Image (cartoon, rainbow, N blue to C red; front, side, top):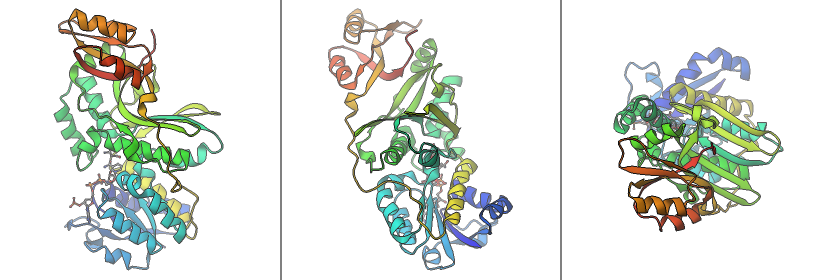
Length: 406
Ligand SMILES: NC(=O)C1=CN([C@@H]2O[C@H](COP(=O)(O)OP(=O)(O)OC[C@H]3O[C@@H](n4cnc5c(N)ncnc54)[C@H](OP(=O)(O)O)[C@@H]3O)[C@@H](O)[C@H]2O)C=CC1
Ligand SMILES: N[C@@H](CC=O)C(=O)O
């Protein structure tokens, strides 16, 4: 019998408990013994909950319990998650977490402690919710060179953008729905301003390079400036707007950034709607693949946590080779990245003339009833865009664009 503890009985933690109880027969058949949750750490009491008797508010009840060999961390944030996870690993317990803030900030150290202690530190649920992207990167892509990852990695923002696009819904209303459905972070600014996507693409990039990609080196823009007029233009361009984390790997040249992207209906990410995530991975042998599935929510996320628990149970006495080393991976400035740019301008002739010239405009879009105009630029680097934009008066907004030339 494997005895586990869950730290944090919120959306994901409760999902993990439910998954372990509901699927106990399947789990036992697969790992050859029963998996039981012995303790749950939370500050609240949960009267009437099926797990009520397991709740404790003392971490020492888990840390000091030698029967507990597997700890799941689903509290979120880094304090006290870092302290508790480190202590559990140092006690020789396996740790599974869904907490990307923890993994991005302290993953390097925690992976090393796990290696030293011959236990495992797994975090499948930290990226892509229920999508097994981390294990797929580690096993399914073995032996080939990964050149690019572009992913919709945040369920909350994709849910918000989809409803703004499809229903013309207001940003604030749909954010409240995402919170009610358990998709959003405790502080939803982490979703909206792109910080959550930033941590996720930094984690994926660290896994690809085998070195630590510091999330603080990742250029990050969120979706708070996207408005309903942007979606009117997107419709005209047969496109939609997605928040993406994008990384390119060319030898030791690595660029990683997060930004809203106009994607045409020919791009596989266009079809990724609602809380779903889609992660396009390019490899030198396989070409392009896309992983797709629920990016947030109670049971989809619990499914990824449970898979990690099973993997730890199958490797009780060994550390599975996984993660990255303490070597730092330099991240090249995002100014070298090349895009097309969708640029909105106030409608005066001088602005439009300057924009057409500076951005080598491939398209000009004038929508009825708007006292403004927009262009789609030729491809150019961020550096060139910024230099040229300084010469164009009255730019209202800019969104990077992945549009075909039709
Ligand atoms: N929700 C989702 O869809 C997904 C979430 N994640 C990640 O999983 C983690 C958990 O998310 P989620 O379940 O949504 O968050 P919740 O806020 O729903 O749950 C966190 C739980 O941990 C408890 N908690 C917080 N601090 C402590 C503490 N010091 N001691 C004991 N209990 C504590 C909270 O209690 P209280 O409420 O009383 O503070 C709450 O019950 C986060 O890192 C998140 O980023 C990853 C993938 C998807
Ligand atoms: N807030 C996150 C939760 C999962 O990681 C999201 O919306 O994707």
